[in-house]
Length: 373
Image (cartoon, rainbow, N blue to C red):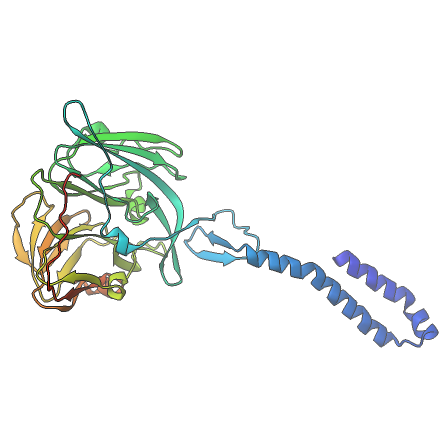
């Protein structure tokens, strides 16, 4: 376009005197006409480009974690484009993955799961705040895996990330199934196989060095082993407690139950009075030595790690280090809104807070849980 404008300027210089003398056009008027022509011709080339760019904006993540949305060309070679990830804490807290079930010749129940790791996705964790999440099955936390004591668990793991990853399960299994020394490279696959034991609430996470980085970005999930005789019927929820270091300085900027800060405060969990509530709580907060869980206007029976069917104590607040977990059971006698949150106040003020909305239970309706389905 600058060549066209240069040609117009050259034409003006060579012919301004002839046009002004022969046709009575003043040089200043001629200059004005030239300016208009150049401006119009410039818009002709610029406007189509603007229109096209606005139709295809790019989301760009820099090496510092800054997310940029731009219609221009991305020239920072360190950053990359990441897929946007939608996550629904409402669905997640009640979603249990029982795997694909079959029965072996010896009568053992086989549960097969398929887990894929990625490290290129972006989640809007708070309005206007984007974060590069590393995911198991496009989710942070990963899926809640559930089996019954004695089942054979087979995990088909695929790494679609740009970095090595693995699966390390807490529980009892052979050394070669521990996911510590056998990292899986980009495009690689590995099959983990072990029996579901012991009974309780466990977890899994990536164990590739630096483990801190892989956990902080979201590569973890809950793993439940039910007793063969089952548990009492209850309304069940999973809360994986986590933090988000969105500026990569080694300190969390947000805290949450199930990733999204303040979600259960703005979307209270609906329950009924006089019905049994069972919560599976796993603490995966990185960078902080402790976390805790406080329930308002009530107390709960607490089963540390869930390995016993008899509660260890009756309380309204527990403190957890990383990967500590437990099962809580309680019911509300009176209808109303009841807070639950971290009693480390910094955490609750930065997002780890929610509400149980208890309704008058005119007719108790607790869905029967078919364990080992």
